[in-house]
Image 1 (cartoon, rainbow, N blue to C red):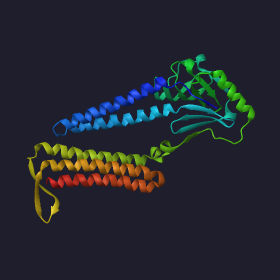
Image 2 (image 1 turned 180 degrees about the vertical axis):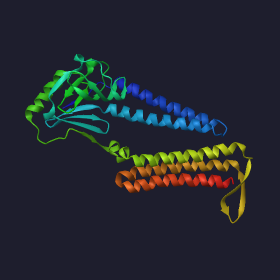
Image 3 (image 1 turned 120 degrees about the vertical axis):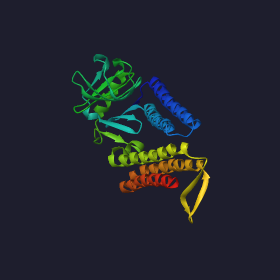
Image 4 (image 1 turned 135 degrees about the horizontal axis):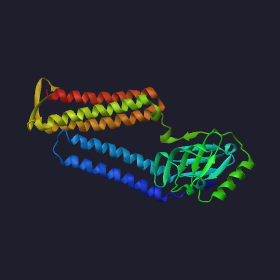
Length: 297
């Protein structure tokens, strides 16, 4: 048996935030492409990267809201949000408390109008509470209380839900279910809990932006045709347009995305292989930085 909350408002708000972030990112990139090459242009690309990342987060959270539901069987109440399954053993549910009897909660986490995922301290003996709700007022909340943890959900027909819980509890559990979240697919990737892997990925991005900054800083002051001493051509110095230098950061973008992507995937299979690929991303960007320095020597 499944109960689904109202999700229309939360989906509109979340989708709007994601679309706004992507629109700002695209506008910043277009603005950067129409500007003369200079160090200051990198700020536009950096901010565009931040907005792109935020857009992806809002898109994922909005997708997760679209999957939000509460499933009941004789073993557990399963709260589904995206790639997370929050398991609440049926035998642990002590009581259900309507939210209209309590003050408006302040949820810490991923929270906007019509979508609240996070936690809060609730009065009335409920205590620390995990929120998987779409509430707009306390009246939209129903608290599921267990000895160790409480949960806040949004149920339109609270009476039907309470009757369903009682019916499943009378049947009794067939298997023991741990009271814990079960993470699947993207949410289950160990990368999110590995500070070393995250540090290596950030270092790769930092090295890329250092190379990018060097090229864009040097470019405006160069003549239209420059002597390139890299790569070596049997001691012959090649003369080319200074636009050749712009191929270096473009190559860096491709190598960065490739190595970070492969490192993320490999990390879930074998941590050390993931580390090697992330270190390779740093090395590749470092080599490109060195190539740019040597070419302009």
